[in-house]
Image 1 (spheres, rainbow, N blue to C red):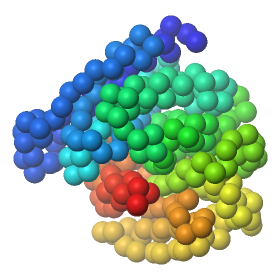
Image 2 (image 1 turned 90 degrees about the vertical axis):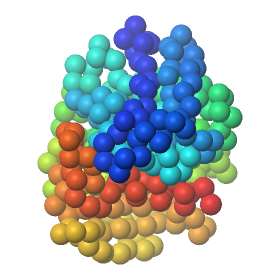
Image 3 (image 1 turned 135 degrees about the vertical axis):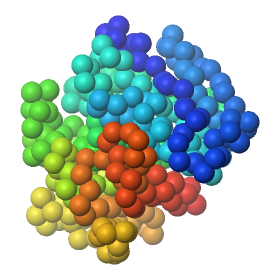
Image 4 (image 1 turned 180 degrees about the vertical axis):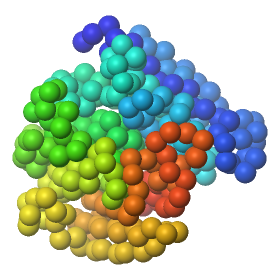
Length: 320
């Protein structure tokens, strides 16, 4: 492990988020700050209660502070009384500030995956959070790392939320990774999930997935969301994982089309034994941006639906 990777730190959850209807000062009065040590890395985190842990992982050319503001994650933390952890990529680890989801050790559950997991466990111990109440969310390369965490560390992750994300192990090499966002995986991501499932404890493997994807995303194409759904269907033992054309979503157990503002939102769901294992939300006309995000920040689109609200609903449902 490189020195740069060893020094990856978690950023402080920003509490002066814009667009909270004047609630920021009130949150400041109630927030609790804490520190934890993870392999010599000092983690600064913030809590608004003793609820679940939500890990929000930023994307490329973005900082942890920016993704906190752009997603208004403090509003969700206040509403759900949860702990939010914001890992921050060290600039020496990637010139673009991306998470190295394509790095073989990371894709296998080591490298940056292990670093973020260590941060999660340090915060969990501090707040005595149940290990099955830790959720991992991310945008773009952060969504790709979130998918790795869910597949490689299923006993430590209660659910994955990937906005414009990529499947675990989607690139056969760092060079091949350059084409994956636009063209999809050059590996068999369903087989990767099958091998992970065979190697794990099937009784504790249920890791539900929420995928949010822009229909007009020209950075991370919608094919990646399809592959991510298929991968997690296989991980969770759903028979549809291999069904039909692999470039399309498999037949869902439920599908609903609604409108949010001027956009069409198509939600597809799959269940195992009556429990949600995958939800795919396709937002027509959305590019490479966090849906419903704060307009003052990059990689956000202020128009509905609000992805942070979708995240919160998914977490609540999975905890029931």
